[in-house]
Structures are given as structure tokens and as C-alpha cells.
Length: 122
Image: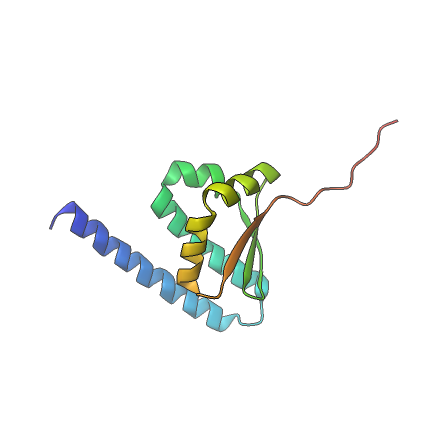
């Protein structure tokens, strides 16, 4: 068996495993949008790491936090506004392709951190 065949087989196994994991969890958590977001992001994150590699995943996706999956939208929060913009500019097409593999009706949005109340120093 050559390396290409081995990688293709591993990809199919990963896809089957992830799809089954998603179906099982989503069926058991229909009314919990936070749990659904965590599950969907876990699967999406694994796929991104597999496709983009450890370094890119660590730099852009490792610190992403799932917020909610509601109304067919997965909302994910990045550590900085810059990271959200970078991901939306450079990786959104890939992310959308992967999220559509989970569910054709899903969309995914990366947002930056919410502004904290500013303190004024006089």
C-alpha cells in the first residue's frame, strides 16, 4: 500500500468518525445551542488541523471559543479582532466548505472579543 492510498483511507476514516460523532451528539443535545456549538467546533477544528497542519491551527484556531449554534449559525469567538478578520479573509471559504459537510444549511461566523467596559483615568 502506498502513502497516498494510506492517507486517503485515513481521511475517509476520519470523516466517517467525525460525522458519526456529530450525529450522535447533536441527536442527544437538540435543545442546547451551546453544547451544539462546542461539538460542531470540535469537529471543525479537528478537520482544520488535519488540513492546515499544527502550526497554522495553533496560530489561528487553537484559542477560538464556540459561543452558540442557533438558527443554523455557528458563532465562534477569537482572541482578537485582528484574528477574526484574518480568519474571515483567508480561511472563511475552507471553513464554510467544512461546516457544510456537517450540515448543508449551517453557516459559521468568527467574531472578535466583545469590548469590555473602558475605564477612564483622570
